[in-house]
Image 1 (cartoon, helix red, strand yellow):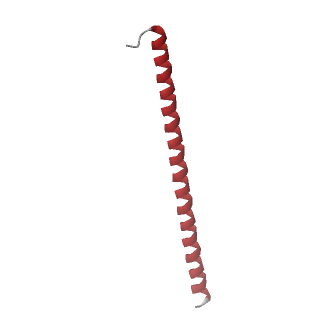
Image 2: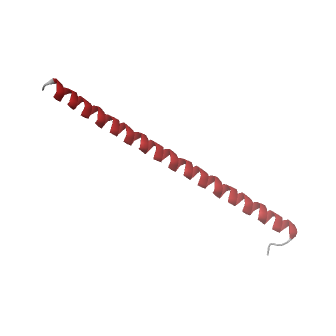
Image 3: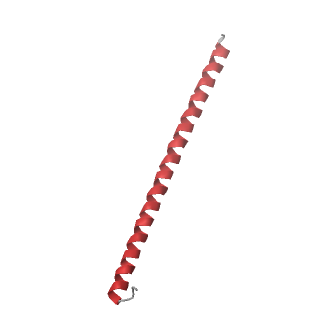
Length: 66
């Protein structure tokens, strides 16, 4: 290989490595975002359950539960 071909080959390798690293980082970002969404959904469900429990307690206190 002459110097030009060698440099071209090295550039191609570096570009492929950069694309792979970018893909890995994008995957990590997607996983982090999904985890955050799952946590938020779980927190929302817990808040809803607590609110329902408070509502039921008030209804029991007021004699509104049948």
